Amino acid sequence: MSVVVANIYHELLQDLKGRVRAAQMQAVFAVNRELILLYWSIGRDLSQRFAVEKWGGKIIDRLARDCRLSSRESKGSALGTLRYMHSLAEAWPEDEILQLVAKLPWSHNV
Image (cartoon, rainbow, N blue to C red; front, top):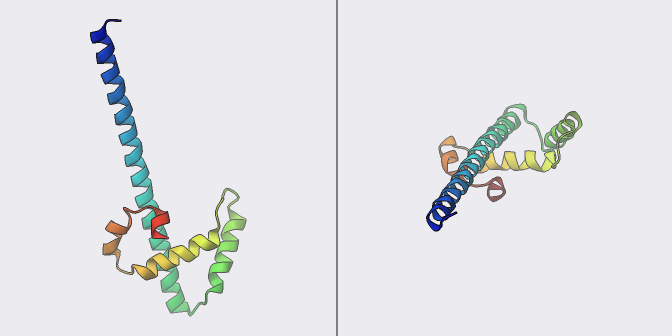
């Protein structure tokens, strides 16, 4: 392979790798955004139910337990996640802020 062909090949290889990495990052950001929006809406629903139904914090314990029992694939603490979802919605009750909040990873929001 000549030096010119090797350089062209190397440039193409680097371009392809960069494009794949960029697409992977876009996918990660899109998934993160959807999860944050989902978690916020679940937290908002919990907040609204707490207000209307006069539920206490123990309902989150029960929901988490029932979620764990019904989902064998669940690997995290549903209790902690539900609490964080509720806290997220309490911290950001207006959905306009979500456009900013959804850009942050879940761990940053927690």
